[in-house]
Image (cartoon, rainbow, N blue to C red; front, side, top):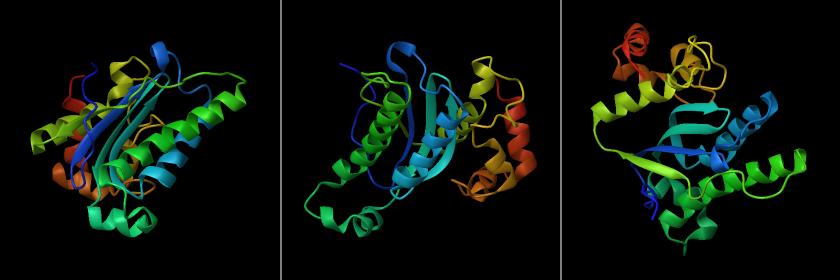
Length: 192
């Protein structure tokens, strides 16, 4: 039995992650990364706040806070007989399925792209929240992709620092570290 596959609950924070089937690639070119981010914005952003993200060639990380049940039900009123956990899970599933179908079509491939089911870790303390933010945003360094994690184009570091609000409200993250310089220092001093 795989671990870390429990139901997602409203108003809880989670580290969501997954990798390509058998450790294979998820992203083949720049457009793939951008399309995956677009799907996150369209399908996950309505049910959750995005606190951090990082996409790497063969896996991804998202740090999310699921919205309240009231907020989610207001958006999906046609699903008033559906359990809230099912609605939440379905949005993630729709994101990953849409992406897989697009990749299979574009690269004339068949079969699964992601390992199933996607993994999640409950974030239950502010210390764990801070560690997870740092871990996700320095993931390109951990995997030897780049030492320049601030300029890595498929993570939330620049959005947080510049508070450009493409997916996340950088102010919420920066406040955890006092200010932008505190966030930058924490990243610099975080060993992956």
